[in-house]
Length: 264
Image 1: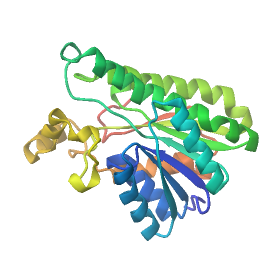
Image 2: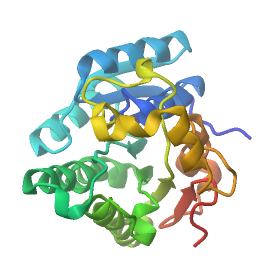
Image 3: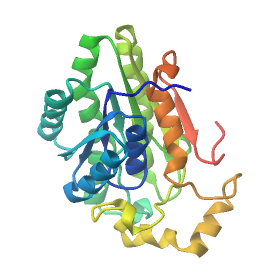
């Protein structure tokens, strides 16, 4: 299947680590022009170097997706170098594994700012250009937590439910301009090793790292019909397909890539 990404301009937020890194490198293999919008500039540079080794043009733009001014500046830089944004992947996310009652208000606000406002900011920043060019694809990372309400992921799940609902609403609004929005909901997806995550990754939190032991991986796998924990590369195929011309008549949809954890 020809996904036709060669020469297209793709922005992936939070692409220094884990799923975002895998997505950025997958686009690089397709010879897209990849922008790594990442708050951890050092980690982003590592991924950009990997992308260029794959034959792509890549750049890192330090971006705090919670800051509207940062996001606007990032999009301007992308347009200056690559002319436009053809694809936006709203990947960046953050949570800490804990009960709602155990978290502080600061943590709730951080979850809302990163997981929901980040998606709002980045989506709004690219829409004017996509509408003017009569085309574009936005793929946002949701979560099965946003579809079913997951234990220990209360505010995070609420934010991801918001990502799903907002994507549908905007898809109805901008479809007449040829702009498509879809959502991919990964299940538990763990980096293979510390080289795949930066110092600011959510996987650096002590509570989250506890999930990465072999014993915990085996326990988690039992909850999935496919009986394993996802790898970052498991998610990339769905993202690239939904961003491609092959999915040109698909919009407003939510696809779980979670080993059958949810079937709704």
